[in-house]
Length: 101
Image (cartoon, rainbow, N blue to C red; front, side, top):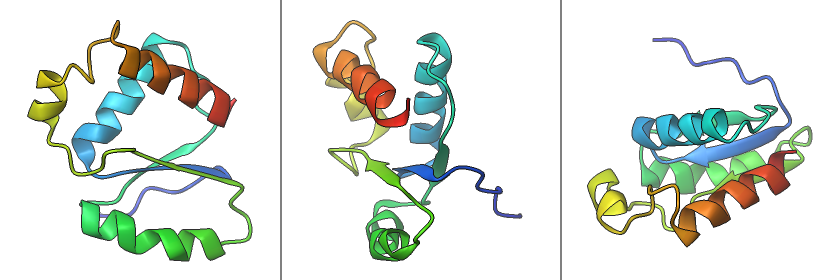
């Protein structure tokens, strides 16, 4: 499988495919301009391991990552991280809009 092409100078690092789809859904639902790449790091260890390399890439001007990496999708639902009316979700939407607008 080929690596998706990165097009933007702004990167959002996510732990896995589920996180990627959650962010894409939030962007679509809240009409956030997708002017950033969402990078599926394929696991928390690879996400953490890629940070120093990403920071050294001179063309990158913004990097974002999940505050609580490693939280399973089921636990995120239980904690209501994914409920669109929760304060955490609203903070995430505000953060995405601020960071990537």
